[in-house]
Length: 538
Length: 63
Ligand SMILES: Cc1cc2nc3c(=O)[nH]c(=O)nc-3n(C[C@H](O)[C@H](O)[C@H](O)COP(=O)(O)OP(=O)(O)OC[C@H]3O[C@@H](n4cnc5c(N)ncnc54)[C@H](O)[C@@H]3O)c2cc1C
Image 1 (cartoon, rainbow over the protein chains, first blue to last red):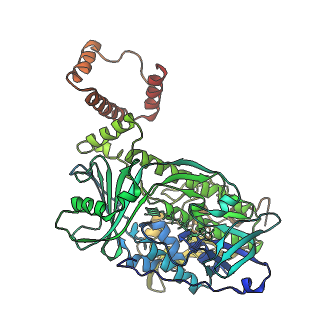
Image 2: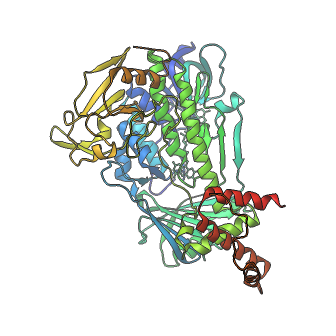
Image 3: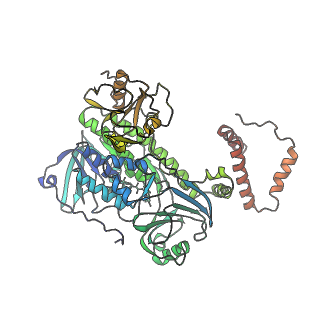
């Protein structure tokens, strides 16, 4: 289908469950092998949970969807052992340029800070991303059942029951817990009759992926009102294999079938790229988008994640990037509940933390949309005024909104956090994801985030306390100077790690608590709090 | 800071005339654009979100 990519073909193999003729129960079933379901399933398998992943398709994401993956998503995939091929295959970019008409009015640099293993952004076609995730899922023992379509959900009783259609007939499964990662049109969301609140936008956008040898730098170029596409916007972004993503705003009245025809698309591209630029069309599609979310992501034993739970506009690259953070947030909590080390109430914090993150993403994405496609004459006038001023007046550049790119969620108000009682400088209050930094271990260079295990960790500066167990939960110790060398001093700097300082880090690498001195009772209380274990003293 | 709605412009008639002159010979569309740019420039100069909010509210209340 594509010139640069061969879609893998996954077969349906009837499982022992299906052949048994019985309805079998699994601890966790994940529905949807998109980026989010795959990420959740890999994390579960690595944590030792037997997981079944159902997907109704027979291949990876078809056509043109996500392009940009942000550092936090890459760090999560690195924790799961699959970021390397993504970074190797993907295109790393740092500069964004904003044009109006034929003039560059402003540029931004992502200013990636040195001393992080992962780059600020990587551009990669979604089908490659999913291919790498599928490979990793198979390596770690996820049982993926392709071409199995979930057609409903029954939540009566203390488990979930799923009817499933396959090419070789129907069967049913039960699960103690269900992760619904079945995408924007989630059948599980519909089967439960849940409201998807928000706004649909009627502007249409045309995606053209072209293969090009031209000499464009790996930068994000965004045009307002370009000479080749008057009164609309256009985005150009480089992907792997010399494939370029070009995104034309078409307005609300465009006819999608008409716009997709090569006779329409090719002249547009020629006008944009110049008559002499050689290119081949790889993919064309027309899309509209929505900004919506579920009110709650947890519904008893059904946990919604990714596009099934929330949908944003593509401006800002917040879709997959936030969905992957859903998985990261959910899986350790589910594991603790399955192990009996945390009450089910811990899963309500998934809802609290990720609904807050979705709100933030939706706010950003809706604002970008309103700037790019103004909805009224006055909104258009202010948008144009901002662009008029941006070239000569620096303040106005900050108002130009061609998409506010995905940043990691900080769970500042989470009930799992223990509030700071000491003074800290820097940007790592409880709820923040841990910053990476270069380290050395046994004389070999490495990265701090790679040393954070899959459980709770105490990151210590100065003397190491004794290893600690809080109930059945082991807390790993990671001490600067003993377990690793802070070779460039960046760990101490980023964590404001004066001697004596201790950070309690959650399994998803977010800070749960921090103190200027180790106090066993306080650490125990903070671990209990981070596991939603109320009133525990031990 | 609070929004200052007491007289603050030394020569109010001069200011008013210049504001009207600014729009002389402009089409309605051009005037709308000039006004939008003007609001943005002034808003940035003020900077204080509390003042800006109070001004937006005061402006809306009169309609
Ligand atoms: C034009 C465009 C550009 C984008 N750019 C970016 C970007 O740059 N960065 C970014 O982060 N995001 C981007 N996104 C968003 C991103 O593509 C989505 O957020 C992401 O794919 C969501 O992943 P998911 O796993 O939640 O859902 P999906 O990827 O939709 O996966 C859902 C899976 O569930 C399966 N499924 C559905 N129903 C059933 C069923 N009943 N039974 C079994 N299986 C089922 C489907 O086959 C599918 O495999 C973009 C989207 C678009 C459209």
